[in-house]
Image 1 (cartoon, one colour):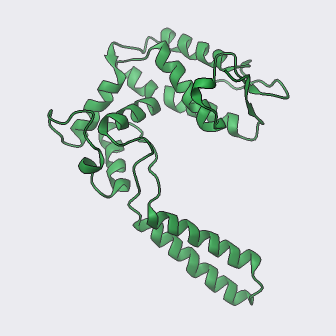
Image 2 (spheres, rainbow, N blue to C red):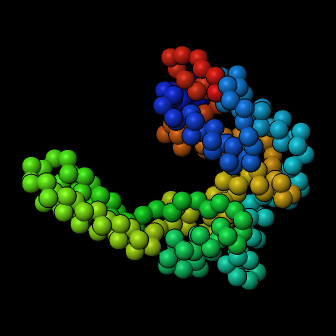
Length: 228
């Protein structure tokens, strides 16, 4: 286990706690005297028990059934079914429709080649404005054309599935992790093991550290002790 995730307080810790609030459908008080991830875990476990929000249904199974109904699939579709063959080509629209139909937040999709090309156009537009010595009118014109091209390419981009999301079962797991509080409110079982796993995943996303190396005694900051 690592001793600390070595956050520096430039917003990485704020992003972690905002994600906790969103996923567990909870409002945290500021300046809580937390020093490590074990403190976060104990607070969430206490909250879940006090609010009596954890039911008996399996959260991932509940999510899978919601996704299957929203996608209008029959019972023949199992969790190991390939998602790309079922969900359609335009993931931007498909995921937006799923959020509306299931009431659950979907994971972020990845940019496709058009989206990546659009991002390059934005970089070119910035470089033309900031780094070239062309006359102002030409700089502004070229930057405008490049920026417009970037917007158009991103609009046309159909996006790609999130990393590690090849089957509908894997999508159900990702969606469950992002909507644990809402699912618990709807009767899903929220176990201590699941709460801790989500904490590890969120901390890993903000620090880049292997989630399995983050333990209850792992602290947020290295050089100074700060309150969360």
